[in-house]
Image (cartoon, rainbow, N blue to C red; front, side, top):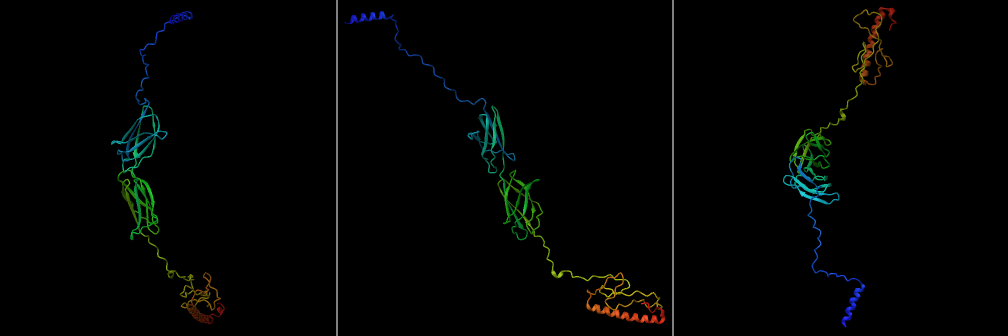
Length: 340
């Protein structure tokens, strides 16, 4: 039963086409496909740069132990380090760009932290920075005192400085004190203090004092003031009293002793035969008589009653003498009797 089936199969093959021998798949393993090679270890980019920092203070001494951060433009940390014994710190393999350098610790109790600053890193170059750490300011307490009692005085103003520079101005308040921060440039700095305004009622403290202060250290400065001499108040009883005006004496007019003069009549034109008898004037018998030319009018308002009475008696006595003399002249020279 199997033979006819085989012949039929062979005929079928011959009819349908040429039979081609195809070898069966080999059992030998094929060669492996080469895999991609592993990436080499990361190496610094050929255009990377670096930042070298040297830290010192204002006196030129190095500052070891200062801590710095290097931040990129996005504020991400690109490096961190601390200065060594020589005050140096280096950031290597830094991609070019602009960075922010920030100090987080000065490494010294005498120094302040420096302000942040920008750093530009260029390809293949080292950016060198000199960082100067400032000294901490000295704490100054100013006192103004009475030189006798030691009482604290408000209102005193002083300038404090060094060399030719004034660095700080302080004015004492209600408690007689004032305080401030005084910048220093070394571990021991000498300063001067000069008062420019004294407290009310006190004289200016003229000497210039000197003192020494260090970084961060407290120091007290004291100026003393003496009270100014006050002028005594005038005594009302010492006021000058009014003195009556002194009228100038007129030649030929007797004085009454009180600065006033009694006018005398002009002499007559007739010669006096008796040379021993002086020429006399017409007596003035009342207050309405006029004073001779050249003298001031006499009012009598500033004379005392007893002076007035004495002057009147002198005038009457002089008038009597004058009458007697004229009568004698009338007897001797009748023609001149009307000249008076």
